[in-house]
Image (cartoon, rainbow, N blue to C red; front, top):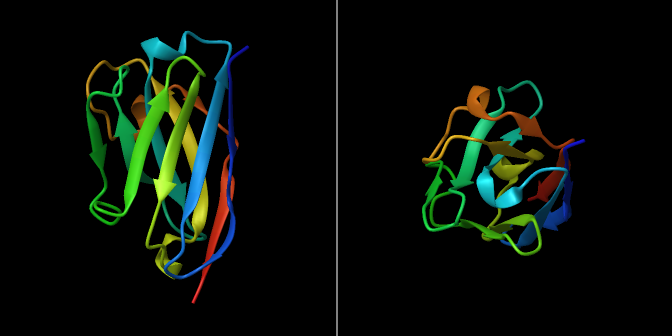
Length: 124
């Protein structure tokens, strides 16, 4: 049974940082691209960041480029999202997801496995 479990969310002041983790089990982690998405109340789930299987290629949504960093540790079956310079517009539930696509993938429909999400709230 595949499980993706996010952690590291919480409440932070504007300008602060958080590091999200996504622990994977039940799959061969190194064979999956990993992505992060987020969903704010009343909005569509949007793409945040993605990493290819080895982590050699990454890609970011325009709203987080230069502030967020995706990484992964295949030995620990874990993906990370370092979030810096947070602002209230970053408030959302953050989800990690796994895809079998071998290239950079930003479309949520192409992700097969999803975590339950972790809440990030940024106060002004």
